[in-house]
Amino acid sequence: MALVLVTGATGFIGRRLSAELVAAGHEVRAMTRRPAAYDGPGTAVAGDVLDAGTLGEALAGVEVAYYLVHSLSSSRFEAEDAAGANAFGEAAAEAGVRQIVYLGGLGADGDSLSPHLRSRREVETLLGAAGVPVTTLRAAIVVGHGGISWEMTRQLVDVSPVMVAPTWAATLTQPIALADAVAYLVGVLDHPDALGRTFEVGGADVLSYGQMLQRAAAVQSGRDVPIVSVPVPQRGLVGGAVTLASSVGLAALTDVDLATGRHLLGSMSTEVVVTDDAIRAVVDLEPMGYEDMVRLALGDRLRAGETL
Ligand SMILES: NC(=O)c1ccc[n+]([C@@H]2O[C@H](COP(=O)([O-])OP(=O)(O)OC[C@H]3O[C@@H](n4cnc5c(N)ncnc54)[C@H](OP(=O)(O)O)[C@@H]3O)[C@@H](O)[C@H]2O)c1
Image 1 (cartoon, rainbow, N blue to C red):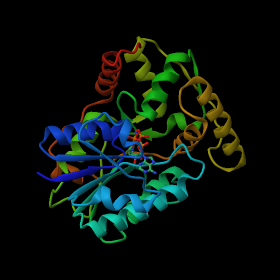
Image 2 (cartoon, rainbow, N blue to C red):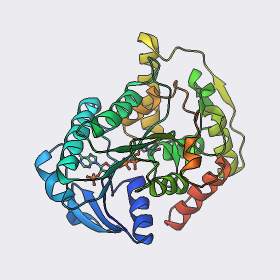
Image 3 (cartoon, protein in one colour):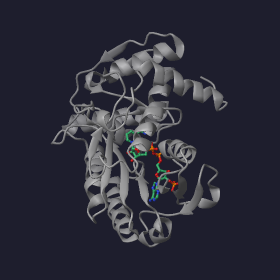
Image 4 (cartoon, protein in one colour):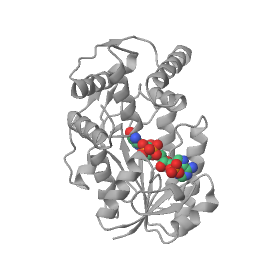
């Protein structure tokens, strides 16, 4: 059993991860910028990755650290995420942390990566620059109650009788259930074959974003949502204008804020599917299919007292 720091412990994934780590017998320190407001599993500790001076105390004695921080809602997310990862990697090395586990984004390296996915990729390298072995899990959308990308999907199919989608409707993606993503995160902890390695993780189904929306609508309300695809480029001036217009529409139709919507939509032209299944040799898990994860997310929503 280990003393584990979970950054992003108040977040969608961090909250569930902290609960599973406590259940597995680990001692969990839950890092947040607002420890007084923390009511989740583990013991709250103050820490801000953009204020390096706060990290020494949070990391003192920590054996394994999870890095689940991002600043997607900031217009300066690339600079902030790089600075945060740098500071955290250095503080972790100083504290003698033996493993950092990071959840990043899927997608092949190269020019086609969106700024958001490029930034997630850069964080992988920066976290380990001071010498702590990093285990990276790369995932596409994580489906679960409260997840920003999933809530965007749910609210879109909820309000739209017909979806007008640009070319990203055909882009392939491989969503993963929150429970499975968390099981992988727990499974690589202190695993000798996971140190310093990058793994791709995904659910059982590869779908286009269009199919994802349609199947979510079918599970959610038994409705058929026709998708009308409009062939506009994702990049360049026209593509930028379309992404901006779409994100304004998205912000109007859903709870997602404009900056986050814009960054997420900008990533939807990148194919995000698993191409390497090396994780199977490390964590024994049969990930669930899309309809099952949607049912679980909707069930958790009802249990949280909200309506469908
Ligand atoms: N959600 C998905 O579908 C998905 C898919 C693939 C990968 N991921 C990755 O999984 C990770 C977690 O995602 P999530 O959806 O759980 O995020 P989330 O719900 O938006 O939570 C983000 C967390 O970041 C923390 N944070 C932000 N700025 C911080 C700072 N300066 N210092 C310390 N903490 C800070 C926040 O904590 P406080 O506000 O309490 O400080 C919050 O708990 C991210 O790295 C993301 O890229 C997510």
